[in-house]
Length: 386
Image 1 (tube, rainbow, N blue to C red):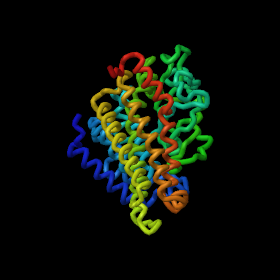
Image 2 (cartoon, rainbow, N blue to C red):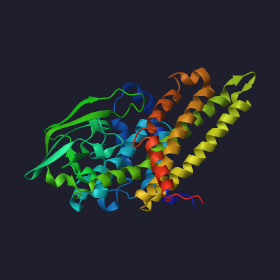
Image 3 (spheres, rainbow, N blue to C red):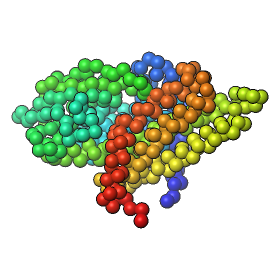
């Protein structure tokens, strides 16, 4: 397979790299300390057109696709995974509309999202339903020209700063076919954010508890037909998994690059750290893992751009997400080890990278869920090595 990037991809990568160095890097530590959402970073993405990479041109985006988005996220994540998450959310919150919405709904919501006029959040996880999406308990009932929705969602990234959410709820009890999706403006009566979470990492983007109580939404805001929303949710997560992998890829690159710079300057036993074979082995192992993850992530994102994100394609998307995110934990841990006690201190970004990496193996399907997807494909002969 040809992994050479197109000129368009290189331009997007270089644009993101410039924004990362000029706008994101100086703010990363402050974001982590304050926990305040970085409006200036969001504005920087808006100003250079990075918010519409996954949105088709006919709906106001650039139509650059998911490989382009992965490249941009990778560059941002070298310095700040919270800021990288903001870019990912630009796709996660719009893909349900792009995949399951009507022409009218796409024209209503996507152009403004691409332009950065509004931003959304993806509301699927519930207190009693995480990976088991079919078990969601939120309910919606038709009432004239509206739907009335009741339910609670948890761990919603960006939920407290969103202008709308994609809210999944059941109409009836017909299993996954009862799952429906609604575009819910956050100023709707009955919509509330009771709390935001105190969390270990990725502190710059709030994670919120979302509650709808007798929340009335126009029937025009329901996405798709009966029984289609579950599939829309699964396909949305499939398309975004390589981008989660890109968050891990960029984080690992940033962590080991920082450790390498430090090791060139720090001297022990009369010579720089980089001259010690033990350190060289750690650096080489990091490079091996990063390059393997890069090829998995780029390949998976290219599959999505080629329309290959259905059930039979999911194992390859899961492989990329699992390897790249788990790799980021290993590499950021080794980067801390290279610095020794210094790496454990908040004076250096590595302890933040390590905390942020730990989130990636949980969000958008845990590593264990990804392995179930991969193993099922092997057992059913969809992945065949002989």
